[in-house]
Image (cartoon, rainbow over all chains, first blue to last red; front, top):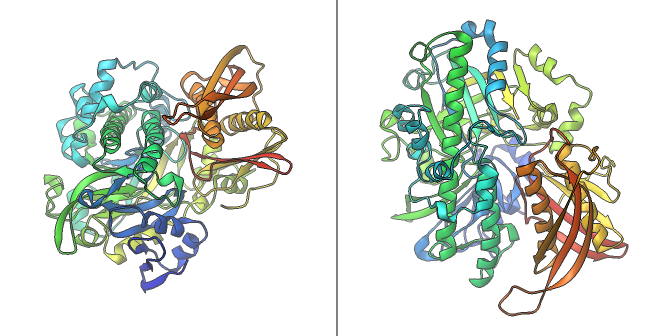
Length: 479
Length: 157
C-alpha cells in the first residue's frame, strides 16, 4: 500500500478502492519501518471503508496490528450520515486506561523501603491470571451500581474521595450506561475481579519524575523533579472482555442485516441509530464504568500500602490523583468537520483523549492547561506525562497515542528472554519487579516495545500532545 | 497474515502457535474434523497453562454448542472451554466431540452444525500463565485441505 509522506511526522494513506476517506498515520522514518512490518497500515485503510466515517482514519505513532482496527487507531463516525459503531474499534478491554497518582515523596525517601513496598503491593492487590478478590464479594446490587455509577460508587463506599472524581475523565462515570445490556456471563466473569490488575501488559508502577520539560505545568500537576508517582494500568477485566465478545456476535448479524460491506470480519458494526448500536453503547458504557471502579479500588489499596509501609498518614503522603484516562472507548463528542460542528462517535482503540485548554470537558483544575495524558513506556525505560492540545483537537478528534506499541511478538520476546534472570536484570537497573508469573514478564521485556521516547517525540513534534515530564520506573507489579 | 512459528514448541500434535505482534494464535491440522476440534481445545489449554495439562482428569462434563458454520462453531467451542477455565479454574484435558447436523436457529430454516462432547478435566492444575480475553474473528478459519482439516484462530490477550 503506497504511503505519501506529508512531513517529518505525517504519512497519508491515499484514498483508493472502497476507502471513503484518506488515512493519516503519525510517525517518523524510524517508527514507520516498524509500522510497515505488520498489517497496521492495511487496517487503517480498512477502517476508512466503514460507513459514515468523517475526516480521516487515523493511526498514532504507536500503532500496531490488532484485529479489525489497529491498536493505536482513531476513527470518528457521523450518526446523521449512516455512521456506525464497531466493538472492534474499542477493543476487548473496554476502558483499558491509565491513572497516575502523585505524592509528596521523593525517590530518595522511598528507596530504602522500596522492596517492602513492592511486597506489600503484591500481597494486597491481586495481579495475574485468574487473580480475583475472593474476599471481596459483590452483591448483585453492588454490581449494578458499579456498572451504572462507576468510580462514584467506589467513593461512596469509602474507596477514595470526591477530589478523585474531579480528576477523572467524565468524573469516572460514563452517562447512559445500561446494566441490562450486560450479559449474565459478563457479570460472572467480572464479579470477583473488581480491584484487580489482570495480566498481560497491565501493571502498577511506582516511579519518579526524572526530567521536567515544562516547569510550570509540572508544578501545577504536582509532578516536580524526583516526585514519586504511581501508575495504574488496567481495564474492565473479564466483564468488559465478555461484553465485547457478546456484541461481536450481535454486530456480525447486524452487519448482514444492514448490508454493510466489511473488508475484515472483525470490523463488524451497526448503524449508530440502530437497536444493536443502542444496546452495545449501553453495555460498553457499563463496562467502562466497571473499569473506572477497578482503577479507583486499586488506587485506594495503593494508598493503603504506602501508609502501611512508610508508616505515614494519608495527609502527609499527599497521594492525590493527577488524572485517570481511558484508551479503549467510543464516545459521542462535538468536533468541527468541514467548517461545521457535528456530534460524532469517536472510537479510540489504544489511543487517548487529549482535549485542549479551554475545552468544557477538561477538569476545572486543568482548564487552562489542557487535559493530562499518560504515555506509559515499557517496564525498563521511561514513561511520559503530556497535556492535550488544540492541534490534537483540530487534527485527530482530540486524540493522541497511548503507549510504546509492541514491536516484537510475545513468542519472540519470550525467546529473547530465555535463560535470562529477569528479576536480577531489573534490579541491576534499580527496578524492583514483582509478578505472579515471570512468563508474563518475559513477554513484556523492554525490547519487545518500541522506544516510547520516539513515539512521544512524534506526538510532541506533530502538535498532538505536549510533553510535561518524564517518569522512570522504580518498582513494577505485573500480572 | 504472518507465517507461523514452526519451532515445534507445542506439545499437541498438529498444533503450532502463530506469531502476532500483540496477540497469540494457533494453527491446527488434523486428519478429521472431530480431531481438529480436539487438538484446538488442547492447544488452547496449552496456551493458557504454558504447558500441557499435568493433572489427571477428575471431573467429566458435557458440552453442546450449535452454530451456523464451522468457524463460528470452533469459536464457540473454544469460548465455552475458556469460560469454564476463567470462572471456575476448570482445565480441559480430554475431549470426545461428536459433530452433528442441528436444526438451524435462523429464520430461514436450513441446517446448523453442532458439537456434543464429553469433556474431562480438573480444577487442580494450579496457576495459569496466560489470560485469554477473547477468541477473535480475525483470520478465523476452518477448512478442508488435502491432508484433512485446517483451522486458524487468534486470541486477544
